[in-house]
Image 1 (tube, rainbow, N blue to C red):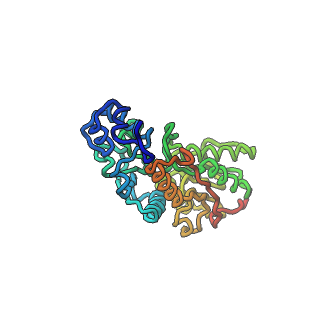
Image 2 (cartoon, rainbow, N blue to C red):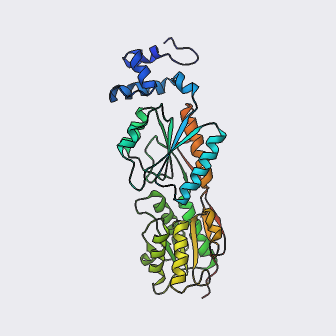
Image 3 (cartoon, rainbow, N blue to C red):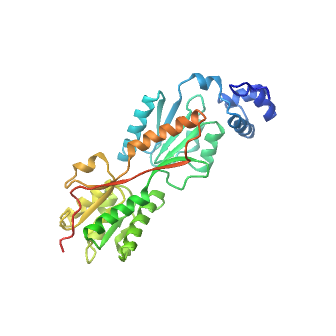
Length: 335
């Protein structure tokens, strides 16, 4: 091959792919009029030969943040970290909000390497076919807090959710609580399942029975936490503590306690998960498992830029540590 130290030429890639130089140029520059099979073959060779078009070398990378809603507090904090890091590192940011529905194929179709270099999906879902379509166009993908186990070879950023669930329950057990409820998040969420698994491990390790009536399915929302907590607070005997799957659920649980005539933390201790900015503003201030949400946004930008610049990230999946922040919503049981 006649490639120079700067990498292979279009002619080199065309010879390997068995196509014309113009076809390679179209693929490298994101033109739409190339068959899917040909595009996939040429893209694979471009990656293997570490070819980067002059257009890509000379332009500022644009990273698209894909979100369900900007009103989700944890999403907003991740975005804050991502925006600050992108500005620091000279990358442009675009934003796509797709609502509660999963992103459809129409969303995928509007993007080419001319408009975006990488997508960071925050609390969003892309099926394997959609991921492959991005990959076939040379658009990098990083998922933050993936809903399911990451696909082999996919890149993602998460937190130590199992350890966080374990720590939350251990904190309550250490205070002397023995009847501890769990307000679960979305049933189909790997994050929710991991937090529940950590809670179960803590109780089992302490020799405590897991009461199925105190493990309540739901969603990561205030309204769900309110409903779930009212359910468990009406059990006999009443739980003396609650682990919530999110801070929003925990805030709903605090309101449920008020409605059910229970004092926090005198009658029921409550632990949240996320440590959102508002956690210290609740009454009482909320004990919570802190996810380093802004740092997750920072890490996602770093991983995306590594992929754009053809540097291999240290790991396909990176988990940032969670830590328990103790505040006034937890205390030893009074009886």
